[in-house]
Each structure stands twice: as structure tokens, then as C-alpha cells.
Amino acid sequence: GRADLERRVIRAIGDPDRRFAEDKLRILRAIRFATVLGFSIDAATSEAIRRSAPDILQVSWERIAMEMEKILVAPRRAEGLEMIRGHGLLEPLFPECARMIGTPQPPEYHPEGDVWTHTMLALRALERPPFVVALAVLLHDVGKPATIEFADRIRFNGHDKAGARIADEICERMRLSREQRDAV
Image 1 (cartoon, one colour):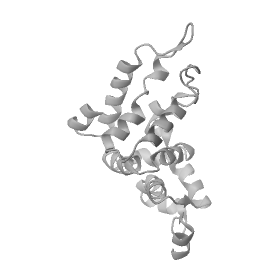
Image 2: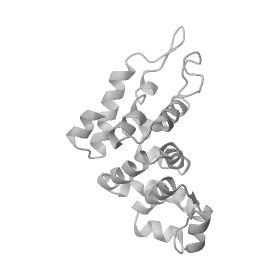
Image 3: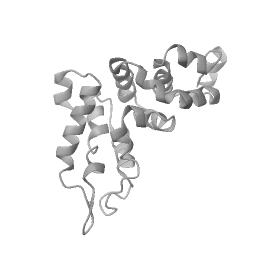
């Protein structure tokens, strides 16, 4: 354990598949620790997270929301979301956000690229945000994939209203309070 701490590595004790089978929340908790502490994840642990990713939905949404809050308020929040994505957790947890990946934007207004890249840049720009602000930034363009049109240029007519509806559904799924849902 001390050697891992010195090397700044998150590693499951013993067999990582067994550890994640014992407590499915550990799948997301490993990513939270890596995000908050600025650690990497051991290769065997990382592979076990990928294999266990579909099991994350066996965890209550209240517990998932607690871990997501800690990830989203951490200084490396965008890196944490990229770890969630890279470990196969984005699709089961937030399929609406997964659809942002590859959704193009007009290059004259968004030279950074797709909606996901834009959102990660916005998350990186935050300084010590409260949870609802960070979650709102994550979800601010979640309506774009559902409203994309190719006319004279790429357009997202009504993405604000679609995004508000989708964000509210996600907040309800996460069992957030009415006050948090309204703020997001």
C-alpha cells in the first residue's frame, strides 16, 4: 500500500474482480480516488473496472450521486469524466452524455470540436464550483445530440429546452433534491 501511495497509484487489494464483485460501488470509487488525489489506476484494476462497468447500475443512484458529486467538485473533474468514459462507465450511467461524443458543432463557432470536447473544456475552466454548478456545466449542452440539424450549417434549434428536460431526468434519476434539480 505504501509503495502504491508513493507512486500515486490506485490498486485494488488482491484480485480486483473479486473486490468489485463484493461491492459494486468500488468500481466508481476507484475513479473518484484517482480524480481527487491525482493518482493513476493500476492496469489490472483498470481492466477489472472495464469488465465490471455494466454492474455499476446495481448500485443505488443515491450512492452513485455521492461519488459523482466528489468527482465533479474535484479540480481534475474533466479528467475524472474522461476516466469514467474510458472505463466504459459513461454509457451505463449517463447515456445522454455519451451521445455528446462525436456530435459535431459548427467549426466557425466551436473550433475545439464535438460537444463532448467543448463540455470537458468548460468543466476545466471552472474554479471550485459547487456540485450543482459543475453538474449544470456537464449537462449544459446535453440537448444538442437530440436536436442536431444540418441546414446552412450545423444547428441545434431548441437544444436549451431539450437539454433542460434531459438534465431534469438525469437529476431525478440521481435522486437529487428538488432544490438541486431546479438549480441545475
